[in-house]
Amino acid sequence: MPPKRGVLFWLCRCDCGTVKYVGSQSLRTGGTKSCGCLTNGMPPRKKIKDLTGKTFGLLTVVEMAPRAKRLTQWICRCQCGKEVIVYGCNLTTGNSTSCGCIIFGPKPDRQRKLQGQRFGKLVALNILPVDPSAKNKRSKWMCRCDCGRLKAIGGDKLVDGLTISCGCAARQGALVAFRPAEVRAQSAVVCRRRGDKGDFANSDVTAEKIRELFFRQKGRCANCPKKITQESMHRDHIQPIARGGLHRMSNIQLLCIPCNQRKYSKDPIDFARQEGRLL
Image 1 (cartoon, rainbow, N blue to C red):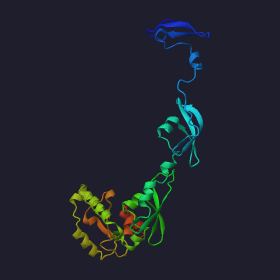
Image 2: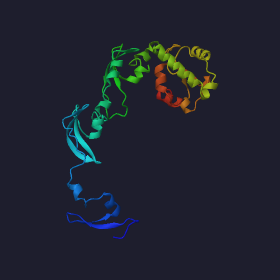
Image 3: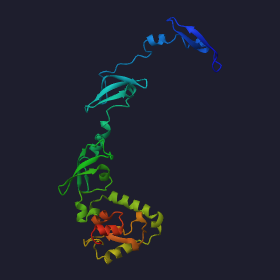
Image 4: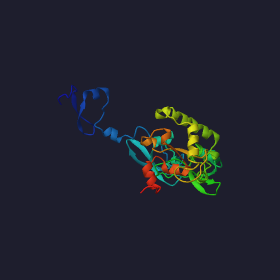
């Protein structure tokens, strides 16, 4: 056979009768010793360890599955009842210990951390299972409010002090009274950092002017006739910052908590129409 890319090939006859071209370098180094029949008839070089019946975390090996990508696979049954196919190397190294249910299940350490604790008017009762199909995989807790109502609330909102009741505290206008001192201090730091950036640094908004605005509004919400206090009032930008509004006293109004939560970052005209004050 003529050489290919400088490699000389020889026509060889195997003991099984097959004739085949083999490179001279493979013959000299012993890389090729047969036409392929020797390899096909030999047992596998590495003996596969039988994992049937063994348990790895929540998985119990049932039987071997067809190989994939030259790797051994095993059919495993999880304690939740689901069967999955797992690579043997992932089982022996501990990379796979469940069908995936353990990722979405409640964490024992978190359950011990929050269960029975009080957050404002809420008491955490028990953690709720997370829906694997949901986009938000954060844990939620079933909580009982002092008013008697049960409500599911995110654990992060409880810890950060963002939710302190089922909603009754906002209606009572006593939001600040139930917020822990460390949460109020943390919020004050965030507000100061925000004030040092952009338009907030050159603002004319001061505590004295806010107090004057409170008395000009006669202690009532600018959107509804509900009475507000200096502790429970919310400072609202008439034209939201997200829509190009400025942090100036001319763009500030004082709202009650429910009105400010409904307004959020809406355009003032759209919000007035929503409230029925414009046609």
